[in-house]
Structure formats: C-alpha cells, structure tokens
Length: 433
Image (cartoon, rainbow, N blue to C red; front, side, top):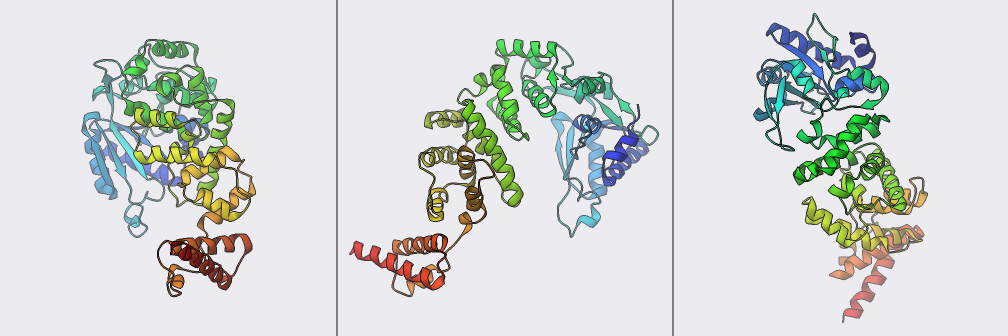
C-alpha cells in the first residue's frame, strides 16, 4: 500500500518537502529512512500531526548531525538510546535559513533499533537493527507502522503487525505477552489511545493489563515515570475519560490513591478543563500549569494535597497553591466586582481557573468578566499620587484598593477614585496614631 496520495491530501506542502528532502539525502548516503509511529497512525486516521519521528536504517545520529548543519537547527543527542532531536529556532529574522521553522518546532530522528529489558519496568538497552526489528519492539500495533521516504519507495507503508487493520477495527493491541512486564507505562498509553480515539482495548491486551496490575508491576516503576504518564493524560483534550478508565481498571488506586473521582469532582474536572481551554484561547501568551490545575479539582483536602505532592515530589509552591485553593473554595461567590478581585486575585491563575470549574460552567458571564477584565484592572491613581498628599506605608496599598473598588463597583472616574483613596488611607493612618 502506498500513502503518497493521502500524504499530499492531508499534510502541509512544507512537510511533504521536508520528508522528500530527508529521503533524497539519505538515499545519497546509502541509507533508508522512514517516518514512523504516531505520525503514520494519525495520518491514516485523518488527523495528521506535525509531531514527526524518523527512523534511519544506519547511523541515525550521524544523519541527524548532517541535517542539523544543513538546516541550521539546534541538535540534542541521546547516545544511550541512539536518538537525536532537531530544534528549529522560532525567530522570524533567521527563519529564511531554516525553511521548515514555521511548520515544525522539532524533528526526532532515531537509529532503527531493537531492545532488551534486563529486568521488568526498567529502561531498555538498545542496539542497531532493521526497520522490522524497530517496529516489532513498539508498544501497540497501531504505532508499529512506517512510511518509507526513499525516492524510489516514497509513501510505501510498512506494516508487519497489521496495525492498519487494527486502526480500521478500532482496537488497541500489544505486540507480545510480556509487553507490560517490560514496560508497565504502556498501560497508561493503552488507556490514553483508547479514550482519545474512541477505540477499545483488545481482549487479550486487557487481560495482560489486569495481570500486570495484579502482579504489582506498576510499583516497580520510578515515581518520575509514573508522573510523566499521568501528566500526559492530563494534557489530553478530554482528560476525564482516561482518568475514569484508569479508575475502572484499578490502576488509579495504585498510582494516585489521593485522587477522588466522585461524580461531582468529575464534573469539576471537565469544567476546569473547559475553562483552561477557554482561557488559553483568550490569552495564548499566558503559560499555565494545566496539569496541576486539573489535578487540584480531584484533591479533596489538605492531607490529600500533601500526600500527592510528596508522592510525586512536587514543589512547595504547588502544594501551597492547592492549600490556598481549599481556603478560597470555602467562601461564597461575591456579588460585587471588587469582592471578586479580593477573593481571587491573591490566587495563582491555575487555582482561580480550578475554582471557576468548581463553581460555574464556562459560559458564566461573571466568571468570564473576572478573567477578561477584573483580574487585570488597576486604579487610575497611583501610589505617587497618594504620597504627594502625605500618605505613606501600608495606608497607600489600602487606599489604592479602595480606589480600585470604586472604579469596578461604581465606575468612578480618576478624581473620584483619588478622593476615595485619600479618605480611606487617612482613616487608616489616624487609626495607627
């Protein structure tokens, strides 16, 4: 089967040019290269991704160095795993020398390899191999397909494990019975793919997952590896689905018993997820720790927060965010804009968005106004304005708070704000005398 027509229909022309250039250069060097894994899977599903993995039959690291020099990209090499990543600089003034910079952020290149696991749940040892060896070492049949990029075979589908057929059937199937013994993190990935695509985990694969669970193989994983997989689940478009599936399979109780998936908290998780997407659309420049925002909706008390943070070595800041959220959640929703500001502005954005998910749907106009307007509002008077009137110390901050409240609640102009700020500040100063 040849996918050239599908590739031209579903991929940007810049990506086609990149893949052809890679294939032509490799052919000149006597190498054969393939696009592999999720890129091929998503291409066949009609949801193509720009997350491209390339496998080289030959020295992948040497080939990646040559590409990096040719395209003027950054390069990160992982010698132990025979892989490298090309990074495109995102600077318009230099992109003329990097023809794919506006299309791709990175490109992963690996030597075709096979793996051996010295013991269960540890990282594998790898050695160079053929493309067929490389595909058979992968997690699931739907990720074990490749597309040849050589000029004379461009677009040829390599599918030794019948992954294309499994895509049509909508099933997630491992390639051998020790798959979850070698790498129990594949359990998380099986659930992610099942829920993302609306597939079903194949019966024997499900049996192997339950067997791995019952044999405590998940406890052999490092906390970092489990955390990495949990965080990837919370980056899914609809994280409630895989999280609920992990609970159903008895996995969540092993890796994160602190998370409570009551019906109400599932609603909170879904709404928090929608608020995060809404906020990111409105403020794309704002960087959010969305995984922690979502997790906080499932942590019911201070003890759960502390235990989860300890389990996965989260920062003191993350723990404190969770605790201040608990305190804020006990308060009633204010009626005046100034009350919203006093209530929510002390919270980091992640906590405020989690609280939004706990209180309201994303269509709620007051919550929208808070994130769009009230959180960023400032009084039209400044501390210097108050200092010139003899105000000092803590009274300045209190005066400015009063000015902002007048602006938000009464639409007071600058002169009126100054009068209110001075009145409040002087009252504070008199109380301190």
